[in-house]
Length: 612
Image 1: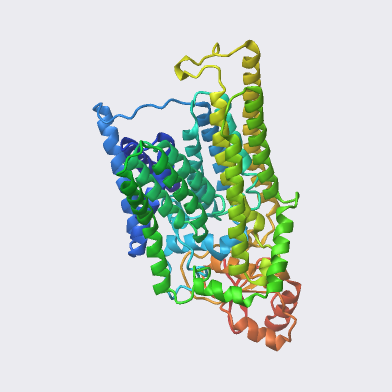
Image 2: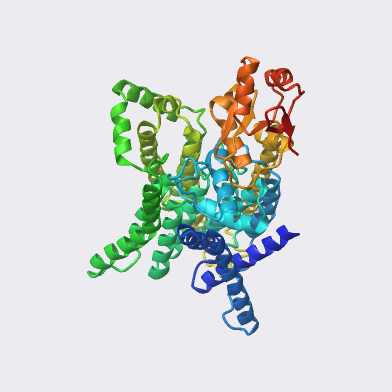
């Protein structure tokens, strides 16, 4: 019951921000994600000043107050919002969004990086009410900015902490950003172009298959917020104040999602500058105003990240994945020329492999755009920008390849770089972004091919002939069918993944003990028979997250004498055995005269006491 009350409070608060932004001129399709990012930035300010918990309450109650204010004014017939109408894509977004949310609510966290950073960061902020400090060794990647964690923390504060609640929170952020793509439609009443974007959204999850939605990693969050930012620049191109405010908010939020968002911010900055230059009648005074607008907007957007970098530098003397030119130079000098050539060869082999999912995505984007351009140019004898768009997207891919290769040789150890660790995961972000850019350009061109260009006159009779009408209707049915089917496939795929993961370490932990929610420094031994889980520190990270301690350690090898075994066990305060470990069971029988299989035990001098 309390979860439902919390959800209602959170939803009303979000509606308050949404309504306020819309009354300030924000596009209805961009208002949801803008409202979420504004709340993130306000929470960020509170968190940096050490007032996170009170900040969450102030931000939410302010939203509720705004919602009540606009509701009251609406009854008085003042400040009413213009009704945008209900379209087919609204039904698609609501229906499949709810279905996806229900699946995620019952999904567990399994991926390694949830426990090495993303989930543990949320848990830390939820139960301590602050950002980590110097003494908080539980957080390993202290340089990672906290944007998504702040958003999830706010949601979980009201709903209650669980894997499902965290996943639903991140999905709300993703779905809010995804809704922005429909602002790119010329005519939102056209079923074909609407379903084409729905279909694109469903396809995008195919390229996110390495991560899926049942994880808190931000590889999908980055491109979906970026496309919302780019669409907003296009929508606000004739409204300078709204345009600059939009760009500043989205740049600030993106840089606080992850350090690697820099590439996406450069894309936004480039398009923003292009828009400033081209979308106004040129006058000499604009030689001054354009640089000033550009510099002030980007400077404002970058300020929160500069604050974060200052925070990391002054709070943490050494920080994993911190941006440092000295570290990059040291890494580069440390790599031999032969090692760099080997990494480069492996990189090129992966790029040109047809087995690469990202390469297939790049080919798909090019084939669709170029074939459509050819058909319209040669058959319809009309000019269009799809060939130019394909070339622009290819240029973006090439530059991104360069930045990714730079990351491998500058930031990764050779052992990881030579395996191209995470290649498809990193490439998925740019493929997804360019997929959306290409799709929006495509549907706008397709809309211009409609026989009737006056939107008010478009109806079932507004076709060149009965044949073109039949083609349009058939194409709409097929596109709509695949849009629903592909999204449903993502939902069933997530369910299947959840079932396949039923015996993974995090799920085993749920069967032996409850999570601890009080930050502590207790020494906990995680007994895991899987060598891989221990060697890559997965068992340790899961234990640290589950028992909320910075001193959980995974161990598989217990080939030792009873005396050494006793000393080893007694060096810990608790022992967690999520899965039967035959050697550990035998030695426990010899040393403590107990038959121990699985469970959580408190260590004493004479015996292991089972915890319930």
